[in-house]
Image (cartoon, rainbow, N blue to C red; front, side, top):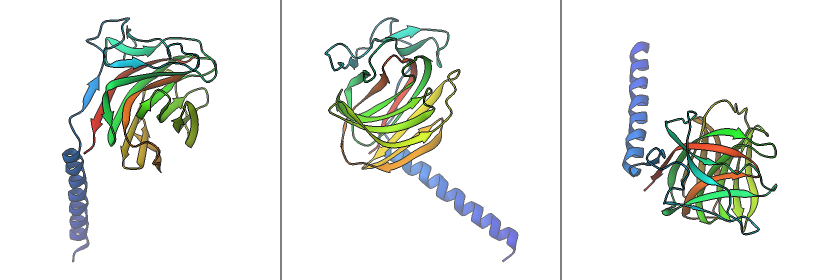
Length: 224
């Protein structure tokens, strides 16, 4: 066979496989639910969201909708604005009405400030505010990590060193099917692992210690 014909056949077969994968993904994913917070009143907590508690019983952060010209999709962001906290003060907010096992979950975040800690992350398969999976990005440490949190104690699953520019918005995305966890930072895959600790649960957002962080365009899909 002519080499040029082989190249065309090979390209066509690869394209068909790629399109088939996209169609299969579309068939197994439910419609996306997106929170951009632009219809919420500033200085309020959206009704679906529930703030956790710290180890001393106080609310786990000051989470509220903010009007800001720094929003990724103007005019609002969802922010954790309590700029103080102990080393292991985990600022947790959960979406009460969402329970999921297999999912796609994505959020954009902008680190604002923090001296002891900075940045934030995604929570999923949460039984409550002390038991969940966590993927977080920290500009002070210049890394991304994935944890399982059991009874309020973090257990590191994997670490990835990554330069995180605090001047710009970034995205974290998690795909979890069965035990398989894939995590992406700015559309680049950084983790591929298996963990069987939690089987389903709520989704949410997370910061730590004195980190002030803006979040926008939280996107969730069930995977069937």
